Length: 72
Image 1 (cartoon, rainbow, N blue to C red):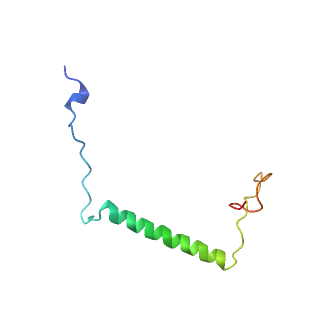
Image 2: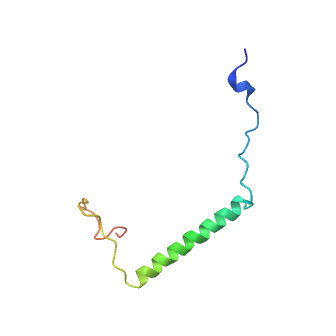
Image 3: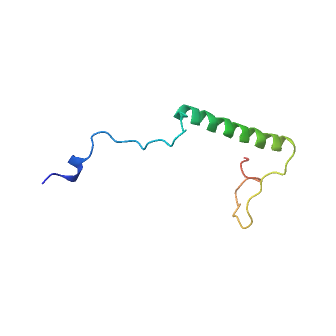
């Protein structure tokens, strides 16, 4: 009797890509980076406009914490 793992293919098979999906991993990562960069720029501009500082959620133990999250 042969072992179950000995019958498996030696090279793993990658799932076939859906029709029309021709973007490489690099292209997908570049798009993700561009999106994150745009989000970061939006957050930074909101801070520059004088948006209210972040606050801790109600009921959070803030003993020993700075006045606002993310500050020291």
